[in-house]
Image 1: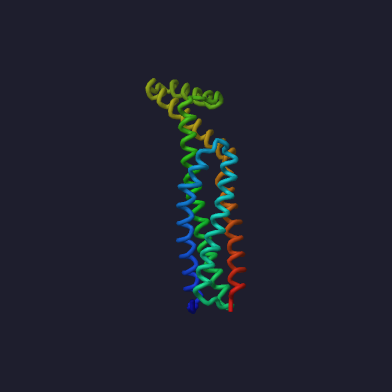
Image 2: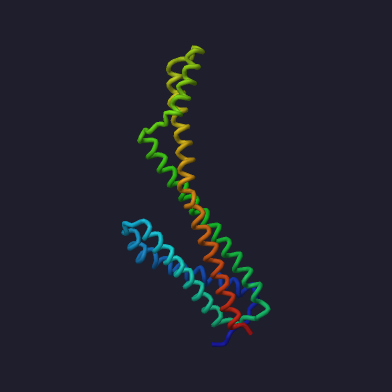
Length: 204
C-alpha cells in the first residue's frame, strides 16, 4: 500500500484518533471480560495491583497499535517528529487531567459515604461534647429557649464530628488521590518516550 504524505499536525490527529478508537475497543474488552473477574476478587490489594498491571498493558497496546496503523499508511518526516510528540504530549496531559478529575470525584463520593456511615454510628468525641455543652450553658444563662439550645447542640456536634472525620479521613486516605496521578504521569511519560522511539525508527 502506497503511503500518503501529511503535515505534522494531521499525523498527530491521526495518531490521537487511533489511540481513542483502539483504547475504546480495549476498554470494552477490559470492562466486560477482565473487569468482571477483577470485581469478584476479595483481596483489595491484589485487585489494585492487577488493575494497575492491566491498565499499563492496555495503554501500551493502544499506543503501539495506533502508532503501527499510522506509520503503515503515512510518511513520517524526521523534522516533524518534535511537533507530533508535542501534540501527543498535550493530548496525554488532557488525559491525565481528566483521570485526576474522575479520581477526585470518586474520592469525594467515597468520603461522603464513609461520613454518612460515621454519622449514623453516632460516635461522639468527648472533647467536642464538652465545648458544645459549655456553649449551651452560656446560651441557657442568656435565657434562650430549650428548643434553640437543643437544636444548637445537635447541629454543632454533628458539624464538628463531620469536620473531624473528614480531616482524619484525608490524613489516612489522602494518598488515594495522588497515587493514580503519579502513576498516570509516569505511564504517559513512558508512552511518549516509546512513541517517539517508534516514529524515529520509521522516519524518512
